[in-house]
Image (cartoon, rainbow, N blue to C red):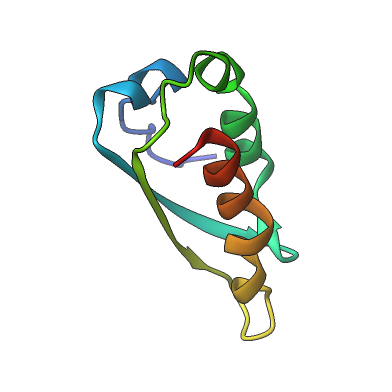
Amino acid sequence: MGAPPKADHPIITANKLTEYDGIMFGVSGRYGSVSAQIKAFMDSTGGLWGSGALVGKACGCFQSTGTQGGGQETIALTGVIPFAAHQGM
């Protein structure tokens, strides 16, 4: 419909996370939680959890929603913090 082609940005894989000292998630909110795409990415790290590959790494997040009451205060509590705690970060 006349939209420009999408840029060829790199897409990270779960195994790439092991190369970094820390991970910062920038997420948009969907009804007080992370989007399905971020959740699916986090779920894909099961093998890393099994091997303890992310234990001790730093983890943080920043979030944004489209409205004042969009749930930004719960995004970290329901999405990123459980992921980080489960991974031993």
